[in-house]
Structure formats: C-alpha cells, structure tokens
Length: 353
Ligand SMILES: NC(=O)C1=CN([C@@H]2O[C@H](COP(=O)(O)OP(=O)(O)OC[C@H]3O[C@@H](n4cnc5c(N)ncnc54)[C@H](O)[C@@H]3O)[C@@H](O)[C@H]2O)C=CC1
Ligand SMILES: O=C(CO)COP(=O)(O)O
Image (cartoon, rainbow, N blue to C red; front, side, top):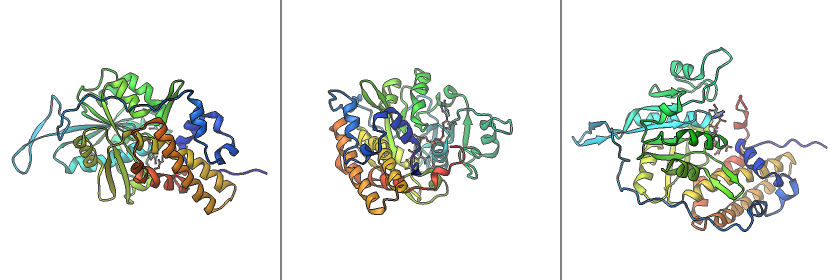
C-alpha cells in the first residue's frame, strides 16, 4: 500500500535531515517525538540566552551618517536605512510590507534595499534586472508589485553597507555562509531581525539563527515569527506576527512600526528564544500532521497531534532555554503558526519548489 504524505513545510525537510534518526513513522506518532532531539545532544544543559551588552536606550537605532529631516512638529528626525537580506517568497513579501511603511513613516528612508541571490531566468535576463524593471519578483512572488522604493541589489556587501536595520530572510542553510561574508562589512550600530524558521544543528547542540547572526556579526538580533504564509500576506489578507526581542523595548517598537500594516498586526514579546523555537519546531508538528492526512486518520487525530505537538514544543524549548515563557506559545508564533502550518495545503504549490 502506498501513502501520499502532504508536505506542509519546506523548512521541515532541513530540520529532519539534521535529525535523520526521527524519520520513522512510529516515533513521530509516539507522544514524545522531541525526545529524540534531546538524545542527540549528550549531557545537554539548558543554554543561557546569548549575552548582550547593555544597549543604548534610544527610540531609533542611532547611526553615523544619519540624514536629518524635519518632522511635522519641526523636530529633527533621524532616518533609519533598511536592507532585506533575502528575496524568496517571504523575503519579497517582507520587502513589500516594509516598503509600504518606509514611504509613510518619517523615521525611515524611503528606499528599501533587497539583496537578491542572483539567478538567470529562462529568458536569459538577470532576476535583479527584472525586479528593478518591473518592480516584481517574477520568480518568487509573481503578480505582486513590491513598491517602487524596493531596490534589488545582487551585491551583498553593497546592499548592507549603509543599513542600520537588517532583515534576514533566507532559507536557514545559507545563513552561515552569508554571515561569514558579512563579517566586518556591516555598521557597528546596526540592529538585525531574523524572519528565518529553522536552526543550525552542530555536534555541540542546536544553534538558533538569531544567535548565529549575533555571534558572527557582533550585533543584536531580534526575531519575527508567526502564522505567516507569505502568499496570503502578499494579497493583503489579515494575519498576525510576533516580534521576539531581548532587552530593549524601544528597538522592538521600531521593528513593530516597520512591519505593521492594517492587515499585518505585530505584537512584541521579550523572548527571542521562545519565539524563534516556536517558528522552528512547529515544522516538526506539521510533518506529523501531514502523515495524519496521508493516512486519512481524520480531524480528531490531527487536532491531537497539534495539541500534543504544541505541548512538546514548549517542553523542548524550555529544556534548551530555561528563560522561554509559557505565554509565548499563545502568541501568533506559537499556537497560530502550528495551526496554519498543519492546515495549509495551497502554499506548497509554489511553482519553483
Ligand atoms: N514562504 C513563507 O510563507 C514563509 C517563509 N518563512 C521563512 O523565511 C525564510 C525564507 O523562505 P522563503 O522566502 O519562502 O524562501 P524561498 O524558498 O521562496 O526562496 C529561496 C531563496 O533562497 C535563495 N537562494 C538559493 N540559493 C542560495 C544560496 N546558495 N545562497 C543564498 N540564497 C540562496 C533563492 O534565490 C531564493 O531567494 C525561511 O527560513 C522560511 O522558513 C517564514 C514564514 C513564511
Ligand atoms: O512558516 C510558515 C507559515 O507560517 C511557512 O514557512 P516554512 O517555509 O517554514 O514552511
């Protein structure tokens, strides 16, 4: 008998390939599939969140060559420059969201730079040229205008050099290489945020992507996760997201301002690891949900998988980082992302997968 298992998550593949020993169905269906992760890290102690230097309490990340303009009240406004590192399906939608806000908000430069991993299209044209000509990412987000203030740039170093707000949104497996290329190339005062769902797994244990960015580049990194199927947000259907920040609430508010629109509601929580682990681990639960669908086991079983999965996500997260908060699992990054990823059936039909 052959089963068709819908694959509900592209990034789960990479998570599972890191944990090949959990690929057997009975183990997934046991009530503690995360226990296999735990056994992968011998004598594993809960990690402390990465240490951050006390940050300056400024409303806007400050920078040396700030352009000063005058706001409506005559006060000098310093403008932040934003670069999006990544231009796939979610990267393009993130650039669109951000670009609609930088045009409206005085505290940001209008222009949003988007680093594109250059590709030659079937027409022989470069993807970057086509994005800049048509204002559309014809490969990863066809049919959606990004905003004329989105500038595609195939040169990574050039794309980041003036930015003081960096948005990382590539598949996680490319991040180590990208960070290596960026060492010494970003501004010292830059703030980063990661929209990447996934983690690096090394012999010494798991490494969160925000931590990889912080450690390799020596910068603070927040995260944004949630029930966020990019194609739905691209056509402006309502959704929520969660920003996980470390110590500085004002930095979090700056990110909330940059991403929020009437159809994209962003809530800050002070729990980087909890938010990021939710975005990563929900993909494991989604694989199990796909198996339930493939085996035609019904909605009750699928709901049980989601409930037990969410509980195990919480237990596993707290085992890794004792600082993780229970309440984070009730935010968009937690229960809502489990539901959306376990239920989605259309988004996998992205043409290039
Ligand atoms: N697509 C979605 O609905 C959502 C995705 N995410 C997360 O966002 C991140 C990015 O996902 P997508 O934008 O969907 O990616 P995607 O699968 O649409 O695009 C892949 C991107 O990787 C680039 N790429 C290919 N080879 C590369 C290399 N060697 N080095 C660097 N880049 C390379 C491609 O040019 C393309 O821009 C992932 O971590 C994903 O989990 C999070 C929420 C929603
Ligand atoms: O996270 C998603 C929806 O919230 C989709 O992203 P993945 O690529 O991780 O499946």
